[in-house]
Image (cartoon, rainbow, N blue to C red; front, top):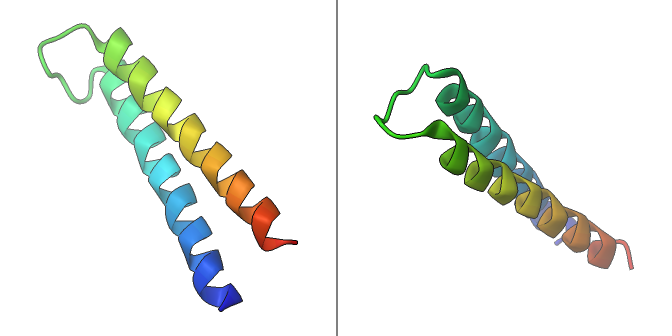
Length: 64
């Protein structure tokens, strides 16, 4: 049971990493969407931070 819960934590952290990579690609202009990259980058970074917070909360509950 603990292994499946750790898999969830790893999936959430991987999602956060992918969001940060996409944010970096948008910010540097590698992916050009034809819009100002700042708002999209801010939303992606905020989502990545929220993913890390969710993983931390999940790990804290898992350790009880």
